[in-house]
Image (cartoon, rainbow, N blue to C red; front, side, top):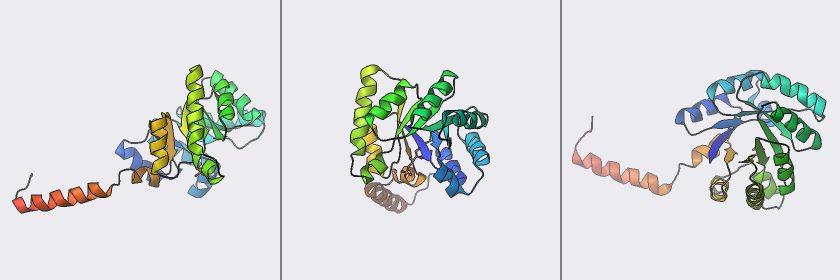
Length: 217
Ligand code: E4P
């Protein structure tokens, strides 16, 4: 499963990129607002740090303006992936862009039928929001299972990008279901490494090592 960092924070992206653990980045208008940076400038900087897809979201609601925004955004770098909302205008834009060889991430997906439409529109990625789904009394991971089943039934190539990931259990469940990608805040990605027994084990080994009086270097 590929890991995308869900942030527009350059320091976080640099640090994660150096670990070799992230395969791309997702942003959205709220994350751009949080960064306090100019949208085009920060997206360009992110595209220079990671080789993989960097999602940049259009904000227009109509197809024609979405196309104009996408035209500007896709010139930023070859690894820009245009993010469009799951609306009829968004899907029309998705089809036009993917037919033209541009990567598209269809976002704000909350039903398996919406995901089916995105695949039919040729989306590169579909982003079901599991955290927001859970928050509203639905089962986010059931949605991922349903989309996996449907995409496999018809051999759709659209990649399932699990979004709105809130904790390590979401990551584990997404991997068990066979999602293609998950995007999570840097804190969640970093937290995956933690285990109390790992820390305890390191402590015990170091104590015994010091007792040997040896040094490797
Ligand atoms: C995905 O691309 C979105 O940017 C993101 O995962 C939304 O997450 P949130 O529900 O925590 O805002």
